[in-house]
Image (spheres, helix red, strand yellow):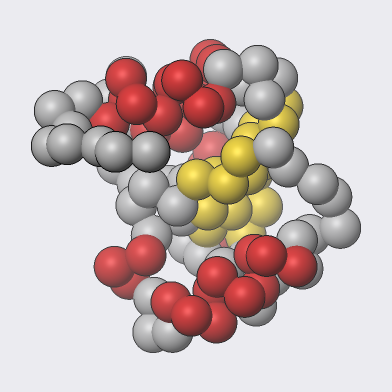
Length: 107
């Protein structure tokens, strides 16, 4: 697939996420707000699980009704299959992106 400069990531992601089971890693981002990636994924996805390392924000999102868990994306074990894995606000924060990719491949 050839992709040029992406002006609107939501437009691109929506094509792959609509009606799918989605794992959103690093889900907290700037949320909750209408421009928050996880908010859009919840609107599009058949089922969405968010994962983030920030326990305080995860607890706040749970209280708002979001399906989210606290965990480290480089080590988390999720015994469930997903159609799409999103790491839209995560990779630049990882100490070992290769370990992250290997771990998620096993998920």
